[in-house]
Amino acid sequence: MKTNLLTRIVLNIVGSIAVLLAILGVFLPLLPTTPFLLLASACYFKSSPRMYRWLVSNRILGNYIRNFQSGRGIPLRGKIVTLLLLWASLSLSIYSIDALVVQLILTAIGIAVSILILRMKTLK
Image (cartoon, rainbow, N blue to C red; front, top):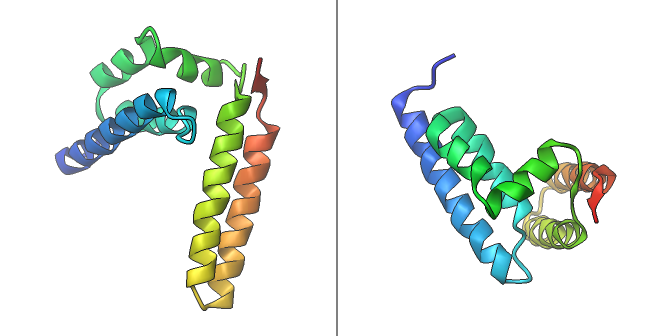
């Protein structure tokens, strides 16, 4: 299935922003690296084989993706920061929305994503 030009451009932009945030995450303790790199790799995989190859073969950033793809896991710090950011943003959203149904849906999504992250192997 071919993606159209506009979709590829948007995916490249989102992927590039995710790479920048991931690079910041290498140096800033509160910003998770692995989730941003996984987002970038998914965007590049769909939009630009060249950018995907660059990211996965990158000497520093590629290790995060290869560790996840090979099933070796993600670092404990990455899990903790991801869960903290997930629940902080969900809590803010849940607090600011008055609709009970939406609050319950957001809570269910948060629980499901948390279980998924916690079930992933932790990289030693």
